[in-house]
Length: 311
Image 1 (tube, helix red, strand yellow):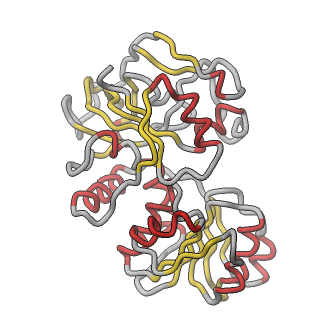
Image 2 (cartoon, rainbow, N blue to C red):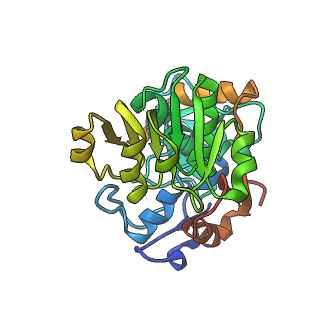
């Protein structure tokens, strides 16, 4: 099969298109024929060596921790899924991923693909969707009627977070650049703040939840807009824990986990037309280096998808 592999940490140039053997599933795994995968910041952070302590990997490594495709083979212990099922999910980042024509995934990390959308769009969902869902609901404990601020609202995770929060019945505020205002509003945001022109901490106060995908000064200033007892949930390192404690604010960082029941709930919302993935660009598998470079440059609205099948 064709696969993109890295043999060492480095820049986009270390991504190599190679011919490698098709892997075989263990008893609790399935072999998925990959129709599409997508590019996430964790891809290039692992490739560059920025995450080697958190995600230790063995070379050569196939990146890509989003997949949408069709099951080709099931391990002898798999009961829930069968050959021919259309599935999507998030393979674990320390194992070979989906920048390849086939990928092995534990059966309990996959959900049935949404029926309303194709594999290209489904591949944009798992990691970003799970990250947004768990940040808002598992860690953020967001409830109907609460007020939430979502940083990076036009990004891959942010676009899902806006939609999930609105579906839950929250009052949703997002930060984005002015050129992305219409996108963020179309996803359900009640207010959008241009982070380049306005200080959100001077405009907002007494929020229940801030969902931070930016970190640094943005994370610190987010403490200023939360009520006592509010929650600041970050996809990055929680940098201001002691300050948060003195203000009676819960500050927590997390890494998204792959839960099939959450993937299938998200699929249901997509099939009901309540949530949609936002695609920035569709590229070919062999363009993975250019796709990662684009992601690394920032300012990508939604997700970059790599088409795998059909070549």
